[in-house]
Image 1 (cartoon, rainbow, N blue to C red):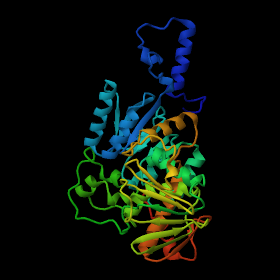
Image 2: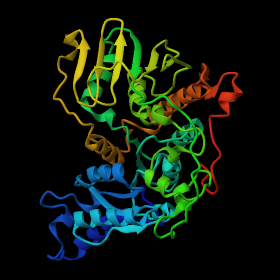
Image 3: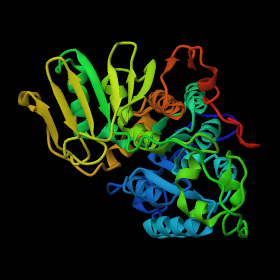
Length: 429
Protein backbone atom coordinates (compact mmCIF):
# COMPACT_ATOMS: atom_id res chain seq x y z
CA UNK A 1 0.00 0.00 0.00
CA UNK A 2 3.00 2.34 0.39
CA UNK A 3 5.23 4.05 -2.13
CA UNK A 4 8.41 2.17 -2.99
CA UNK A 5 11.54 3.53 -1.29
CA UNK A 6 15.25 2.96 -1.93
CA UNK A 7 16.01 2.85 1.78
CA UNK A 8 12.93 1.20 3.26
CA UNK A 9 10.74 -1.66 2.11
CA UNK A 10 7.53 -2.43 3.90
CA UNK A 11 6.58 -6.00 4.71
CA UNK A 12 4.50 -6.35 1.53
CA UNK A 13 7.30 -5.21 -0.77
CA UNK A 14 9.85 -7.40 1.02
CA UNK A 15 7.57 -10.42 0.72
CA UNK A 16 6.99 -9.85 -3.00
CA UNK A 17 10.73 -9.57 -3.59
CA UNK A 18 11.63 -12.51 -1.41
CA UNK A 19 9.09 -14.86 -2.96
CA UNK A 20 10.02 -13.70 -6.44
CA UNK A 21 13.69 -14.41 -5.82
CA UNK A 22 12.91 -17.75 -4.23
CA UNK A 23 10.77 -18.76 -7.17
CA UNK A 24 13.57 -17.93 -9.58
CA UNK A 25 16.17 -20.01 -7.73
CA UNK A 26 14.54 -22.89 -5.87
CA UNK A 27 11.28 -24.72 -5.45
CA UNK A 28 9.15 -23.23 -2.65
CA UNK A 29 9.10 -25.42 0.48
CA UNK A 30 5.96 -27.47 0.85
CA UNK A 31 5.66 -26.34 4.51
CA UNK A 32 4.41 -22.85 3.52
CA UNK A 33 0.63 -22.85 4.17
CA UNK A 34 -1.67 -22.16 1.26
CA UNK A 35 -3.09 -19.09 3.06
CA UNK A 36 0.37 -17.50 3.01
CA UNK A 37 0.33 -17.66 -0.78
CA UNK A 38 -3.24 -16.54 -1.25
CA UNK A 39 -4.53 -19.99 -2.20
CA UNK A 40 -7.75 -21.76 -1.20
CA UNK A 41 -9.67 -18.49 -1.21
CA UNK A 42 -7.31 -16.73 1.22
CA UNK A 43 -5.99 -13.23 0.55
CA UNK A 44 -2.25 -13.16 -0.08
CA UNK A 45 -0.21 -11.21 2.49
CA UNK A 46 0.89 -8.77 -0.21
CA UNK A 47 -2.75 -7.74 -0.72
CA UNK A 48 -3.74 -7.40 2.92
CA UNK A 49 -4.20 -4.05 4.67
CA UNK A 50 -2.10 -4.12 7.84
CA UNK A 51 -4.15 -2.42 10.57
CA UNK A 52 -3.49 -0.98 14.01
CA UNK A 53 -6.02 0.56 16.41
CA UNK A 54 -5.92 3.44 18.89
CA UNK A 55 -8.32 3.71 21.82
CA UNK A 56 -10.69 0.75 21.63
CA UNK A 57 -13.65 0.63 24.01
CA UNK A 58 -17.26 -0.33 23.35
CA UNK A 59 -17.85 1.39 20.02
CA UNK A 60 -14.28 0.74 18.89
CA UNK A 61 -14.60 -2.98 19.62
CA UNK A 62 -17.64 -3.15 17.37
CA UNK A 63 -15.94 -1.36 14.47
CA UNK A 64 -12.76 -3.40 14.95
CA UNK A 65 -14.93 -6.51 14.71
CA UNK A 66 -16.17 -5.25 11.33
CA UNK A 67 -12.55 -4.92 10.18
CA UNK A 68 -11.63 -8.37 11.48
CA UNK A 69 -14.44 -9.90 9.40
CA UNK A 70 -12.77 -8.64 6.23
CA UNK A 71 -10.41 -11.27 4.74
CA UNK A 72 -7.96 -8.67 3.41
CA UNK A 73 -7.26 -7.13 6.84
CA UNK A 74 -4.38 -8.17 9.09
CA UNK A 75 -4.73 -6.60 12.55
CA UNK A 76 -1.37 -6.39 14.30
CA UNK A 77 -1.36 -3.81 17.11
CA UNK A 78 -3.49 -2.07 19.74
CA UNK A 79 -2.63 1.23 21.44
CA UNK A 80 -4.72 2.05 24.50
CA UNK A 81 -4.01 4.04 27.68
CA UNK A 82 -5.95 1.53 29.82
CA UNK A 83 -4.26 -1.81 30.37
CA UNK A 84 -7.51 -3.75 30.79
CA UNK A 85 -8.64 -2.61 27.33
CA UNK A 86 -5.24 -3.32 25.79
CA UNK A 87 -5.39 -6.88 27.00
CA UNK A 88 -9.02 -7.34 25.94
CA UNK A 89 -8.28 -6.25 22.37
CA UNK A 90 -5.12 -8.36 22.22
CA UNK A 91 -7.16 -11.39 23.30
CA UNK A 92 -9.76 -10.57 20.63
CA UNK A 93 -7.11 -10.37 17.91
CA UNK A 94 -5.08 -13.37 19.02
CA UNK A 95 -8.25 -15.46 19.16
CA UNK A 96 -9.08 -14.36 15.62
CA UNK A 97 -5.71 -15.45 14.24
CA UNK A 98 -4.87 -18.33 16.56
CA UNK A 99 -1.56 -16.84 17.73
CA UNK A 100 -0.11 -14.38 20.27
CA UNK A 101 1.18 -11.84 17.75
CA UNK A 102 -0.93 -8.74 18.48
CA UNK A 103 1.42 -6.10 19.89
CA UNK A 104 0.31 -3.70 22.64
CA UNK A 105 1.25 -0.04 23.12
CA UNK A 106 0.37 2.69 25.59
CA UNK A 107 1.76 5.63 23.56
CA UNK A 108 0.34 6.07 20.07
CA UNK A 109 3.63 7.54 18.81
CA UNK A 110 5.35 4.19 19.28
CA UNK A 111 2.73 2.32 17.30
CA UNK A 112 2.63 4.93 14.52
CA UNK A 113 6.40 4.55 14.09
CA UNK A 114 5.93 0.99 12.78
CA UNK A 115 6.61 0.99 9.03
CA UNK A 116 4.56 -2.16 8.40
CA UNK A 117 1.22 -0.64 9.47
CA UNK A 118 -0.83 0.72 6.55
CA UNK A 119 -3.88 2.08 8.36
CA UNK A 120 -5.26 2.77 11.81
CA UNK A 121 -8.70 2.68 13.38
CA UNK A 122 -9.08 5.57 15.85
CA UNK A 123 -11.89 5.17 18.38
CA UNK A 124 -10.66 7.18 21.35
CA UNK A 125 -12.87 9.81 22.94
CA UNK A 126 -13.43 12.87 20.72
CA UNK A 127 -10.77 14.75 22.67
CA UNK A 128 -8.11 12.79 20.75
CA UNK A 129 -9.74 12.24 17.35
CA UNK A 130 -8.29 15.14 15.37
CA UNK A 131 -4.82 15.07 16.94
CA UNK A 132 -4.45 11.29 16.58
CA UNK A 133 -5.68 11.40 12.96
CA UNK A 134 -3.22 14.15 12.06
CA UNK A 135 -0.32 12.36 13.75
CA UNK A 136 -1.25 9.17 11.90
CA UNK A 137 -1.40 10.92 8.52
CA UNK A 138 1.99 12.52 9.11
CA UNK A 139 3.33 9.04 9.94
CA UNK A 140 2.10 7.79 6.56
CA UNK A 141 -1.00 5.93 7.76
CA UNK A 142 -4.50 5.92 6.33
CA UNK A 143 -7.18 6.60 8.95
CA UNK A 144 -10.68 5.41 9.84
CA UNK A 145 -11.75 7.74 12.69
CA UNK A 146 -14.86 7.60 14.80
CA UNK A 147 -16.93 10.73 15.25
CA UNK A 148 -17.14 13.50 16.27
CA UNK A 149 -13.83 13.89 14.44
CA UNK A 150 -12.97 17.39 15.70
CA UNK A 151 -13.64 19.67 18.67
CA UNK A 152 -13.76 23.03 16.93
CA UNK A 153 -13.57 24.85 13.60
CA UNK A 154 -9.79 25.24 13.65
CA UNK A 155 -9.13 21.51 14.16
CA UNK A 156 -11.66 20.68 11.42
CA UNK A 157 -9.66 22.77 8.96
CA UNK A 158 -6.35 21.32 10.17
CA UNK A 159 -7.67 17.78 9.68
CA UNK A 160 -8.71 18.43 6.06
CA UNK A 161 -5.51 20.30 5.23
CA UNK A 162 -3.31 17.53 6.64
CA UNK A 163 -4.96 14.74 4.66
CA UNK A 164 -4.96 16.85 1.52
CA UNK A 165 -1.26 17.60 1.95
CA UNK A 166 -0.15 14.06 2.87
CA UNK A 167 -2.34 12.25 0.36
CA UNK A 168 -3.52 9.76 2.98
CA UNK A 169 -6.99 8.21 2.93
CA UNK A 170 -9.46 9.30 5.61
CA UNK A 171 -12.87 7.89 6.50
CA UNK A 172 -15.00 9.50 9.20
CA UNK A 173 -17.07 6.96 11.11
CA UNK A 174 -20.30 8.44 9.76
CA UNK A 175 -21.36 5.04 8.47
CA UNK A 176 -24.84 6.14 7.41
CA UNK A 177 -23.21 7.55 4.26
CA UNK A 178 -22.82 3.93 3.18
CA UNK A 179 -26.32 2.67 4.04
CA UNK A 180 -28.87 2.22 1.23
CA UNK A 181 -31.90 3.96 2.77
CA UNK A 182 -29.92 7.14 3.50
CA UNK A 183 -28.13 7.16 0.16
CA UNK A 184 -31.42 6.59 -1.66
CA UNK A 185 -33.02 9.58 0.08
CA UNK A 186 -29.96 11.71 -0.63
CA UNK A 187 -30.02 10.83 -4.32
CA UNK A 188 -33.68 11.91 -4.52
CA UNK A 189 -32.59 15.33 -3.27
CA UNK A 190 -29.44 15.58 -5.36
CA UNK A 191 -31.08 14.43 -8.60
CA UNK A 192 -33.88 16.98 -8.35
CA UNK A 193 -36.61 14.38 -7.88
CA UNK A 194 -38.01 16.44 -4.98
CA UNK A 195 -38.07 19.52 -7.16
CA UNK A 196 -35.99 22.50 -6.11
CA UNK A 197 -34.57 21.69 -2.67
CA UNK A 198 -36.01 23.97 0.02
CA UNK A 199 -34.98 22.55 3.40
CA UNK A 200 -33.02 19.74 5.01
CA UNK A 201 -33.80 18.57 8.55
CA UNK A 202 -31.36 16.93 10.98
CA UNK A 203 -31.94 15.29 14.35
CA UNK A 204 -29.24 16.73 16.65
CA UNK A 205 -30.03 14.55 19.67
CA UNK A 206 -29.75 17.59 21.91
CA UNK A 207 -29.23 21.31 21.63
CA UNK A 208 -27.52 22.12 24.92
CA UNK A 209 -23.97 23.42 25.27
CA UNK A 210 -21.69 24.09 28.20
CA UNK A 211 -18.18 23.48 29.46
CA UNK A 212 -16.57 20.32 30.76
CA UNK A 213 -16.39 19.94 34.51
CA UNK A 214 -13.64 19.71 37.10
CA UNK A 215 -14.44 16.92 39.56
CA UNK A 216 -12.66 16.36 42.86
CA UNK A 217 -9.16 14.90 42.62
CA UNK A 218 -8.65 11.17 43.24
CA UNK A 219 -5.48 9.10 43.66
CA UNK A 220 -3.91 8.54 40.27
CA UNK A 221 -3.24 4.91 39.21
CA UNK A 222 0.06 3.61 37.90
CA UNK A 223 0.72 4.55 34.29
CA UNK A 224 0.71 0.91 33.26
CA UNK A 225 -2.85 0.54 34.58
CA UNK A 226 -4.16 3.82 33.12
CA UNK A 227 -1.97 6.60 31.77
CA UNK A 228 -3.87 9.74 32.82
CA UNK A 229 -1.47 12.14 31.10
CA UNK A 230 -1.88 10.37 27.76
CA UNK A 231 -5.62 10.08 28.33
CA UNK A 232 -5.85 13.86 28.66
CA UNK A 233 -3.67 14.32 25.59
CA UNK A 234 -4.38 17.70 23.97
CA UNK A 235 -6.92 18.75 26.65
CA UNK A 236 -6.09 21.07 29.52
CA UNK A 237 -4.68 19.26 32.55
CA UNK A 238 -7.03 18.45 35.39
CA UNK A 239 -6.92 16.12 38.42
CA UNK A 240 -7.43 12.41 37.92
CA UNK A 241 -11.02 11.18 38.06
CA UNK A 242 -12.10 7.57 37.58
CA UNK A 243 -15.51 8.86 36.57
CA UNK A 244 -14.00 10.80 33.69
CA UNK A 245 -11.64 7.95 32.78
CA UNK A 246 -14.47 5.46 32.59
CA UNK A 247 -17.03 7.74 31.02
CA UNK A 248 -15.53 8.41 27.59
CA UNK A 249 -18.20 11.03 27.08
CA UNK A 250 -18.66 14.72 27.79
CA UNK A 251 -15.21 15.60 29.12
CA UNK A 252 -13.43 14.14 26.13
CA UNK A 253 -15.21 16.56 23.83
CA UNK A 254 -12.70 19.17 25.00
CA UNK A 255 -11.46 21.50 27.65
CA UNK A 256 -13.65 24.37 26.51
CA UNK A 257 -16.98 24.62 24.71
CA UNK A 258 -18.34 21.10 24.28
CA UNK A 259 -20.50 19.85 21.49
CA UNK A 260 -23.36 18.26 23.33
CA UNK A 261 -25.93 16.41 21.26
CA UNK A 262 -25.64 18.84 18.38
CA UNK A 263 -22.16 17.55 17.62
CA UNK A 264 -22.66 13.96 18.73
CA UNK A 265 -25.68 13.27 16.50
CA UNK A 266 -25.11 16.21 14.22
CA UNK A 267 -21.90 14.69 12.95
CA UNK A 268 -24.19 12.01 11.48
CA UNK A 269 -27.42 13.84 10.66
CA UNK A 270 -26.03 17.24 9.65
CA UNK A 271 -23.44 15.36 7.62
CA UNK A 272 -26.22 13.66 5.64
CA UNK A 273 -27.97 16.99 5.14
CA UNK A 274 -24.74 18.52 3.87
CA UNK A 275 -24.46 15.77 1.27
CA UNK A 276 -28.11 16.08 0.24
CA UNK A 277 -27.72 19.87 -0.16
CA UNK A 278 -24.60 19.42 -2.30
CA UNK A 279 -22.67 21.26 0.42
CA UNK A 280 -19.78 18.89 1.18
CA UNK A 281 -17.31 21.72 0.49
CA UNK A 282 -19.03 24.48 2.42
CA UNK A 283 -21.31 25.23 5.39
CA UNK A 284 -24.34 27.38 6.13
CA UNK A 285 -23.72 31.11 6.28
CA UNK A 286 -26.26 32.02 8.97
CA UNK A 287 -27.22 30.26 12.24
CA UNK A 288 -29.82 31.21 14.83
CA UNK A 289 -31.66 29.47 17.70
CA UNK A 290 -35.45 29.67 17.70
CA UNK A 291 -38.23 27.83 19.55
CA UNK A 292 -36.01 25.02 20.83
CA UNK A 293 -34.49 24.45 17.41
CA UNK A 294 -31.37 25.62 15.58
CA UNK A 295 -31.94 27.10 12.14
CA UNK A 296 -29.29 27.74 9.50
CA UNK A 297 -29.23 28.90 5.89
CA UNK A 298 -26.84 28.02 3.07
CA UNK A 299 -25.72 30.59 0.51
CA UNK A 300 -27.86 28.63 -1.99
CA UNK A 301 -30.95 29.55 0.02
CA UNK A 302 -31.54 26.00 1.30
CA UNK A 303 -32.49 25.98 4.97
CA UNK A 304 -31.03 23.56 7.55
CA UNK A 305 -33.20 22.81 10.58
CA UNK A 306 -31.83 20.95 13.62
CA UNK A 307 -34.75 19.73 15.72
CA UNK A 308 -35.55 17.01 18.21
CA UNK A 309 -39.34 16.91 17.84
CA UNK A 310 -41.87 16.13 15.11
CA UNK A 311 -40.15 13.15 13.48
CA UNK A 312 -41.86 10.14 11.95
CA UNK A 313 -41.26 6.85 13.87
CA UNK A 314 -38.34 5.72 11.68
CA UNK A 315 -35.71 5.02 14.32
CA UNK A 316 -32.75 7.04 15.55
CA UNK A 317 -30.76 9.54 13.49
CA UNK A 318 -33.64 10.62 11.21
CA UNK A 319 -33.24 13.11 8.37
CA UNK A 320 -35.80 14.78 6.11
CA UNK A 321 -35.31 16.49 2.76
CA UNK A 322 -37.98 18.80 1.34
CA UNK A 323 -38.29 20.16 -2.20
CA UNK A 324 -41.02 22.22 -3.83
CA UNK A 325 -42.64 19.11 -5.34
CA UNK A 326 -41.95 16.36 -2.79
CA UNK A 327 -40.24 15.23 0.40
CA UNK A 328 -38.56 12.14 1.85
CA UNK A 329 -37.74 11.07 5.42
CA UNK A 330 -35.73 8.11 6.70
CA UNK A 331 -33.95 6.84 9.82
CA UNK A 332 -32.07 3.96 11.36
CA UNK A 333 -34.85 1.38 11.07
CA UNK A 334 -34.20 1.37 7.32
CA UNK A 335 -37.67 2.49 6.23
CA UNK A 336 -38.33 5.43 3.90
CA UNK A 337 -41.47 7.58 3.74
CA UNK A 338 -42.01 10.01 0.88
CA UNK A 339 -44.59 12.15 -0.83
CA UNK A 340 -45.55 11.34 -3.47
CA UNK A 341 -45.22 7.59 -2.88
CA UNK A 342 -43.91 7.13 -6.42
CA UNK A 343 -40.58 8.59 -5.27
CA UNK A 344 -39.82 5.27 -3.54
CA UNK A 345 -39.84 3.19 -6.73
CA UNK A 346 -36.63 1.17 -6.93
CA UNK A 347 -35.59 1.84 -3.34
CA UNK A 348 -34.07 -1.63 -2.88
CA UNK A 349 -33.93 -3.98 0.10
CA UNK A 350 -34.33 -2.67 3.63
CA UNK A 351 -31.28 -2.72 5.91
CA UNK A 352 -31.82 -1.44 9.43
CA UNK A 353 -29.60 -1.04 12.46
CA UNK A 354 -26.87 1.22 10.97
CA UNK A 355 -24.14 -1.44 10.52
CA UNK A 356 -20.60 -0.21 9.83
CA UNK A 357 -19.55 -3.08 7.53
CA UNK A 358 -20.32 -1.23 4.29
CA UNK A 359 -18.44 1.85 5.47
CA UNK A 360 -15.42 -0.22 6.51
CA UNK A 361 -15.43 -1.90 3.10
CA UNK A 362 -15.53 1.49 1.35
CA UNK A 363 -12.49 2.54 3.38
CA UNK A 364 -10.52 -0.61 2.56
CA UNK A 365 -11.24 -0.31 -1.16
CA UNK A 366 -10.02 3.30 -1.11
CA UNK A 367 -6.87 2.32 0.81
CA UNK A 368 -6.11 -0.02 -2.08
CA UNK A 369 -7.16 2.26 -4.94
CA UNK A 370 -6.08 5.55 -3.29
CA UNK A 371 -9.55 6.88 -4.05
CA UNK A 372 -11.71 9.21 -1.96
CA UNK A 373 -13.96 7.66 0.66
CA UNK A 374 -17.63 8.52 1.10
CA UNK A 375 -16.81 10.39 4.33
CA UNK A 376 -13.45 11.86 3.33
CA UNK A 377 -11.61 14.51 5.35
CA UNK A 378 -12.99 17.45 3.38
CA UNK A 379 -16.60 16.31 3.78
CA UNK A 380 -16.03 15.63 7.48
CA UNK A 381 -14.37 19.02 7.91
CA UNK A 382 -17.37 20.96 6.61
CA UNK A 383 -20.10 18.92 8.27
CA UNK A 384 -18.28 19.38 11.59
CA UNK A 385 -17.83 23.10 10.95
CA UNK A 386 -21.60 23.37 10.45
CA UNK A 387 -22.12 21.70 13.85
CA UNK A 388 -19.48 23.83 15.58
CA UNK A 389 -20.94 27.05 14.17
CA UNK A 390 -24.41 25.92 15.31
CA UNK A 391 -23.05 25.27 18.80
CA UNK A 392 -21.53 28.73 18.90
CA UNK A 393 -24.88 30.29 18.00
CA UNK A 394 -26.51 28.18 20.73
CA UNK A 395 -23.86 29.08 23.28
CA UNK A 396 -24.13 32.81 22.53
CA UNK A 397 -27.92 32.46 22.20
CA UNK A 398 -28.08 34.71 19.16
CA UNK A 399 -27.66 34.79 15.42
CA UNK A 400 -24.17 34.47 13.94
CA UNK A 401 -23.03 34.93 10.34
CA UNK A 402 -20.27 32.71 8.98
CA UNK A 403 -18.12 33.17 5.88
CA UNK A 404 -17.02 29.78 4.47
CA UNK A 405 -14.38 31.48 2.31
CA UNK A 406 -12.51 32.97 5.27
CA UNK A 407 -13.84 30.37 7.78
CA UNK A 408 -14.54 33.22 10.20
CA UNK A 409 -17.65 34.80 11.64
CA UNK A 410 -18.44 38.14 10.05
CA UNK A 411 -17.79 41.12 12.32
CA UNK A 412 -18.15 38.97 15.46
CA UNK A 413 -15.01 38.63 17.57
CA UNK A 414 -16.95 37.00 20.42
CA UNK A 415 -17.91 34.16 18.07
CA UNK A 416 -14.45 34.04 16.47
CA UNK A 417 -12.82 33.46 19.87
CA UNK A 418 -14.76 30.18 19.98
CA UNK A 419 -13.34 28.91 16.67
CA UNK A 420 -10.45 27.16 18.45
CA UNK A 421 -9.00 26.24 21.82
CA UNK A 422 -5.49 26.00 23.21
CA UNK A 423 -3.97 22.53 23.10
CA UNK A 424 -1.69 21.16 25.77
CA UNK A 425 1.95 20.56 24.87
CA UNK A 426 3.27 18.62 23.04
CA UNK A 427 0.04 17.89 21.16
CA UNK A 428 0.00 20.79 18.72
CA UNK A 429 -1.78 20.15 15.41
